[in-house]
Length: 173
Picture 1 (cartoon, helix red, strand yellow):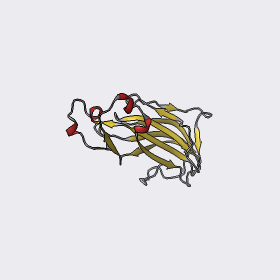
Picture 2 (cartoon, helix red, strand yellow; picture 1 turned 45 degrees about the horizontal axis):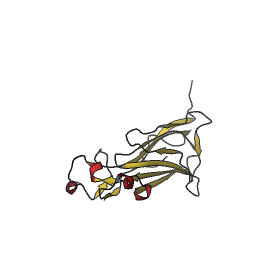
Picture 3 (cartoon, helix red, strand yellow; picture 1 turned 90 degrees about the horizontal axis):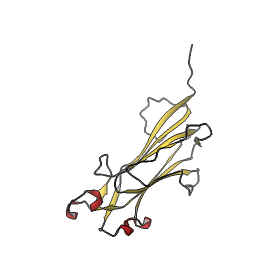
Picture 4 (cartoon, one colour; picture 1 turned 120 degrees about the vertical axis):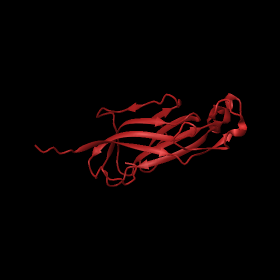
């Protein structure tokens, strides 16, 4: 018997590595906790026209120690919606958002997508414990290791099989 696959479950890594987070002077904890003092990095990824839809079934945010807040918002094709669908304020214990049920999945059409916002506050004392401030970089860069920073969202979605999944063509979805 021939089996026809009508839907696939795939994943997407939205990763922002080109970060440049300025170092702040050591301050009182109240300043470090003030959102208006945080550095923002943001990216938006859209469903391309050749994919009829994608149903989000799970989201997993990831950033490192200077991260203060990670937010995921929907982009409706015209604007980023104001309310986050996922917020994480703890870089060590990421909140996994699962939407497995058919009525729980978030359906995105071509031109719609996800907006990811990562907020950072970088002081030398938080970057490297017991390191003199003169050895900390003035700008913290993005990268894959724990001594650098990142803004990464792992996304799982289901949708129709519409392309060669073995293709190495870079794309969001």
